[in-house]
Image 1 (cartoon, helix red, strand yellow):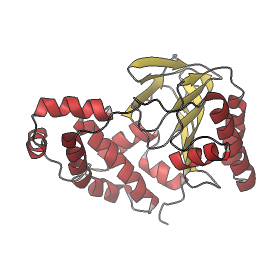
Image 2 (cartoon, one colour):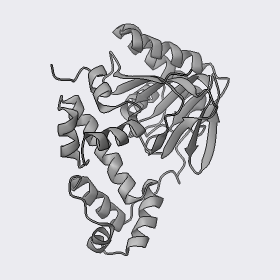
Image 3 (cartoon, helix red, strand yellow):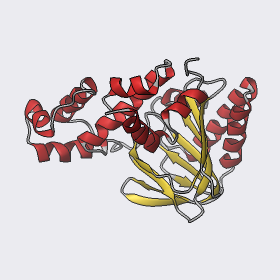
Length: 274
């Protein structure tokens, strides 16, 4: 496991599901979130990651399941690093499978982040391999089977305290950041605009989103960048449109969230211009 490799692509039958297969040794994921679920199978080594205020360790054979919009990191938990397969299903995909199983309406919730010795692990591996092979029928069938097993054995009703309601000031600050990716205000300007003080805004924003305003802004920039890359825009143009200083700045933040550089992401998803 001395060489790092990573491949990120779109599911052959389900466009709302992304896949990653990677081996990392020195790479570190920064604090970030996903708007869908993360379902990862550790195939070798150990991944460590910060999640919900604690440090978790996932050994070979374990599944990692991260709920939407939960801040987490990722780094080697052993000198040899870790290798894994990851599914990134959108919320609607998982909710649709849950509805077929007769679950109550709502966003499915997984209380366990590291799951060991579960039959769902073999099904996740089979689903990922099918998605890697490109067989649309097998890939879609095995994906639903794997998600069904996860939901039946490991999902629970979402607790009432899950998430934090946004205060008016945090909601207003978030909207401003979404609107001003290229020319964001200073912290002082942002706080004044939403009617609060800078340190108070940082505390409230972090409590509601898990990230301070500047880190949240970079999350939004990376998500917007992914959409532009999917449309075929060149990374340098994407960097300019999303507020990064240059392509190198985009690449640094993009890889810390997605796990691959923008160019590799775009090429694998078939959106690169000829």
